[in-house]
Length: 237
Ligand code: FPP
Image 1 (tube, rainbow, N blue to C red):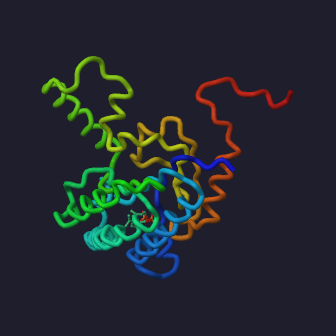
Image 2 (image 1 turned 180 degrees about the vertical axis):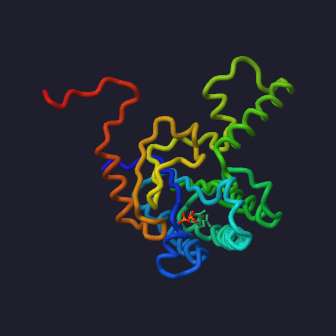
């Protein structure tokens, strides 16, 4: 089985999963977080080199105060715990998105975790926090303009220049995108980076998306004929 080098996941369905069990949405996020820990190990075990997950979007601030506070508490705990996890999995952790909107202690935990894990190399784990693709592209363009003014950026802007200004600079584009829990949209996730990516949508909610489901997604990916605009092989001959 060909394992994708980079898998991106939209972690969806925590709330509905919890509701179906008569539990509060926050319980779904706690279980979703536990599942994320497991999936990191599974991804590493399977030989996935890059894993990028959408944990909090620029739109998620619109959720109830109670839910946002619950998520912040979860991020706080997880970012601290992740120091140990990164070592155990030899996993480099990077946050993509704009962390400036978070409380200072969260921003500090992000800096510590990124610094602590920077030389780990088995799995490169990107967590999108306060992330939105249009926001990422807008920030990138503004930084390009600033660098142009300073004379750091000269000459024609190429696709490579743009990629190098995104939060994902240096990270190869995803080969496979997975979205759990039945919605069929991108929700402002990695719009530039997903240009050639294969998509896999499943009804399984994130807390139930275990190893078996990840393997199923990779098997489906293996059935795809990945061409970048080339001529399709004639299978009838
Ligand atoms: C989507 O489910 C999930 C989120 C908005 C939060 C994702 C967070 C986690 C998986 C846990 C924490 C992760 C980290 C990195 C600590 P939803 O609430 O949109 O579910 P619904 O669509 O059923 O309402």
